Image (cartoon, rainbow, N blue to C red):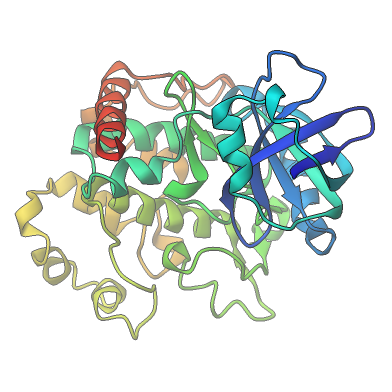
Length: 339
């Protein structure tokens, strides 16, 4: 049996599932009327997850597609199964249908470009190590500017992590998954009440948000700090951002020297440590802003970037040659590993 997505004006053949989470499943698929079988990433939201679908679409309507995945179409649809005519399928498409599940019925869908080079997470996990500080700075700088665009459009992401960063076909970095995003009001100090997200990347204020809420932008900054540590070191800086966590307790109590002593073997620069200290600190008001991050010496020493032009809305988010070279080498390693 093959899984069919019926939209308002066409049919899509769903191949294997390539991603999933708490809000949706993602399939590789193609339009049945397209003889070339051009592949897309097709997100499927069950009816009970309508709010996450709506957040995704809201963010995609506002954000410039240049910096995120291009959305082809979205709406309500219906999934059912049909018998497969194997003679019309390639061997790889046939194999894809073997990795199936039983999802059928009414759903919400979003069809977007497919990033053939996968998640940034795999480029760290599969090699068991992070990137050099220079490469990390270039990757991080690009992501910071992408998040800056989000925040300037009054949206916080709410779930920043390497699994939500895809490597585009040109090896550009694409921030995805806006199911936990929120619209913020800067006149209300960016206060949100959302407690969703990925625990290991969540700020300490999320777990005790209560009725008072917390600053969504400063919480995103915290997640960016955890992300920076992961892409540079290849492991988490702590398990939870709570006092019960021995490592984070050192950060909460500002015993930074003792904290960093555990990472001496990585020969981390003092600039990197200083930036990290100002991203994952316990007090949200002590965290750096986006502009302060971009102006930090660690970024400026490693990235050919001349600061923040506040009058220019077209930020210099580009595909860095050194980053591309490193990502290609890691991709080659992963492909050889699986062969």
